[in-house]
Length: 186
Ligand SMILES: [Zn+2]
Ligand SMILES: [Zn+2]
Image (cartoon, rainbow, N blue to C red):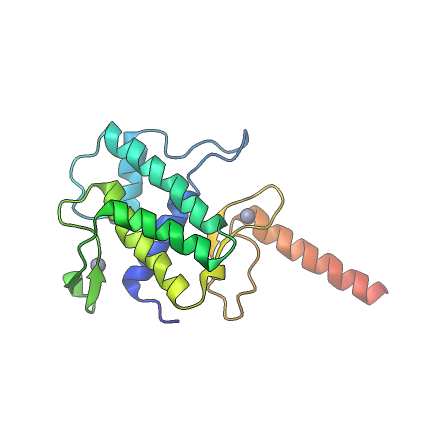
């Protein structure tokens, strides 16, 4: 499937957002306060969101939970239902733009949208394209037992099972190494 620059940016943002959520005792919420949200907005170059408030923080945390549900969806129908709800609530206004030297592409967030609505609209639509393309299963959560990080599998044969965190990547290599040794020994 064709993934445009903007879709790629939206995917990076939504994966990062979902993975800011706390995972049990071990990993704290990395979106604990308004400055952290401002950092997130800056990191992903999310434009036109104005001055951020506690209200924005709680709204973003709320949609974070909804995005997490989409990555956990077991089939396209469930994912589609969740995406529809999310995008409808954000009040989208699709419009063509070629800002900052990028080719023509569509922005979905409404002018003046809050950061939560901006993310719900544009990231929601980025995920919608995966359902449309029959590629919903590329929206995954890491299969390592103690890691449930979200990721988008962009590998050619949809074979990625682990997130790209250092631990899970290493675990994958170690497991492959052990399997090879076992094969060689057997
Ligand atoms: Zn754009
Ligand atoms: Zn992982």
